[in-house]
Length: 602
Image 1: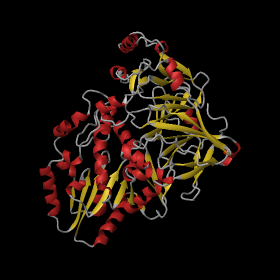
Image 2: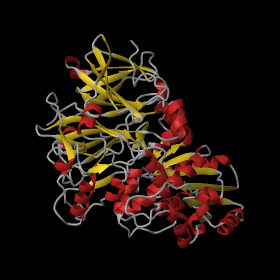
Image 3: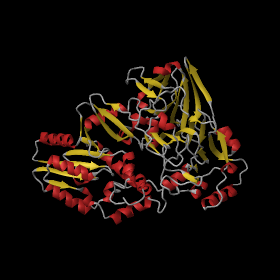
Image 4: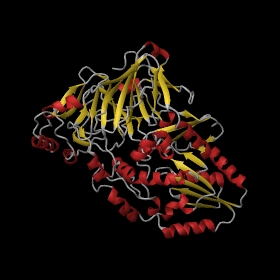
């Protein structure tokens, strides 16, 4: 059931940030992109011009090469892929990070792109380029700047969600290895642990030398934007509230709440997930006049970390965004898998992570019989529980979840805290806003209710890893006192009140809920905030100093307030001015124990 005050969907599925002065700085389509590049080459007036198009893994390099061959008529076209090491050597370099036969988990790679190339083969390609004394030389592919630094430099970028769709369609190979025949989960594992890490480091090394960025998310319909305009757009984004582009996906337990509230097409059996704010996965869209340029949101994190994150978060996490908001929809669906997340020490030792996936469930909505499974029951025999899990997985009797795990009733606006090591899952009939630290792959499933995935196959179960991380002292009494609706009043003013709702002291995030009928005075306190409108049709976010234009947010939308924003206000807007609204805000817990997120200024 959706918010009873809502009569229509206002959820914006295609948010973008308009870039001031961006008109005329971007073109769409291959013909226009080729013409813009040709004009840029001609303005140089040189006898020879090397046009380098470096590419993120997963871009359709052949399409780019063919289109620019036609537009630029180069005297020589070079594919840097010809200088890659043999597949067997690249496989040997990647193998230590891929976890052997494990279908899900590996270790984050520290490989650098040049390691994947043969120095001798690169030298041969460089010699071919230098031998050309007149005309255009075109170098297109991942690692193109290893062949030549470029007289004109373009970076062809690709959003990770789009890359995953191409993996599911078996369209794109891995970096230096043709693995298109593998199952999509294995392609994703390689990308997550190896290829994306390698390419992000290389992209950042290329960033300041760019003349243009090429958005390649729509095959056959690219966007070419001037690098100076792109940098101005990122500067603009890092100093104002903004939303990322959400994406939705079905699952074996998925429901139908988001179909109504987010106005989704009924083209899937259900909609289980929404990544509403996961910068490592979501896209950021910038508007340049009539054109929209989609880039990985991670580009903003990598290139503007201090303005976005603030000095403390940047100092602790580097250029990583440590807060994640996503939706889990089981309204009309089923239970999530019973699961546990790794402890920090385990995550560091086994996966190379500096922190783990502490999380919480905030109930946006709930059916009358909704519940959350959380913590082991008091007095449970751990050996008996583990044996029952193993027997169920081996085809024996189904695991009797309620014999071993607490089942708590769940109501709208309840908040359940889930520090790593706590057994948990959302039950059917819930609409969960999951608030967590960012690592998203690291869920150890203990029991999946004997069902199959949407592909008709069993989903991977990780009993051994899970048991190694379960904190058995988190029993009924401990969970009741520590993890269920720990509400602490923080303060109030004219038309508003604030309360801390979590997270647990063992977790790196804090959350604060504001109830308000008037403007709430807030301040980022030089650290990034992530906010969701959990009640009310719409609100407006404003700068007391007019540092950014008013920003309207609708029900259930998540938005980011960069650290550089400083003071801001949130107040009801439109029809919501007649009703009480509520937001929940997450931020990284200060190292010095300072006051919580979005501390009111008055």
